[in-house]
Length: 114
Image (cartoon, rainbow, N blue to C red; front, side, top):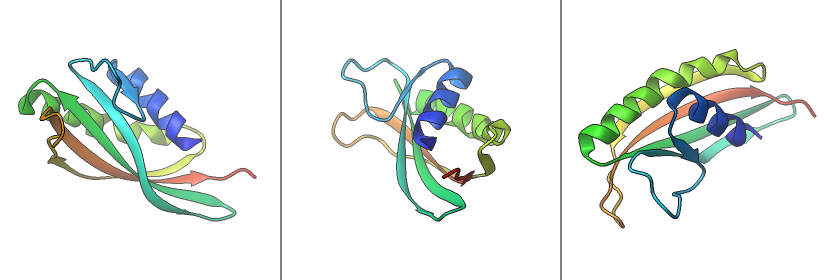
């Protein structure tokens, strides 16, 4: 599953907690990965992801989001990933907790092996 691959890759590259959801015991800095759409056919998966960088301040979250943005193109080194397109990064504070958060969107082309 490409979500697990992306989570593991970012965890390794960033050295922070990375998961599909907000951890119960929030670290000061962490990243969440959410698939937001994309098509699938017999040859390829075209997932769209929202990668959210959480921090103790807007500057901290922005810095972590910049690290995410720089790391994402390296996914191309993973055999099943054929293309990585990194979109915009923007301020996206969490309305429930008020915690600082920035979001980066990306699109992948992933080879499907049925």
